[in-house]
Image 1 (cartoon, rainbow, N blue to C red):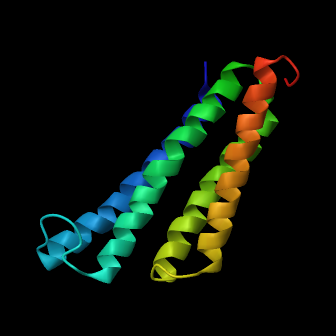
Image 2: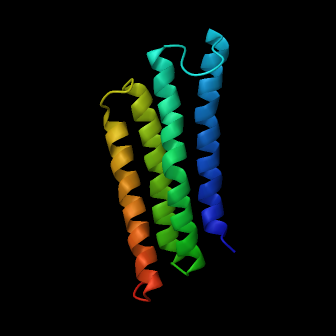
Length: 132
């Protein structure tokens, strides 16, 4: 059973749907069928969604593997929670910074990378029997 990863997968899924909804709302209001209609704001919304789509699957896969291989629940929650917070910070920062620099975007990216790198290391260590 992978109930901890299920929690974070559900939270990430809700975030992805919320980010997609912002794009749909823009396209409906501007009557844009596909793409950004040349609007910078729409490009930012699209990238915020796409960025989540790019990062979430690998992080959840690594979290799932760590859970299935017996990583302690405390670590799973710390890493899963940090990842969700990172993705929220990134989406907020990318939007608030209008595609430019924003502390939320920087922190969200950096924390996402840290979580993914830690999970990768944990999974590699578990494969060799040195972590767990």
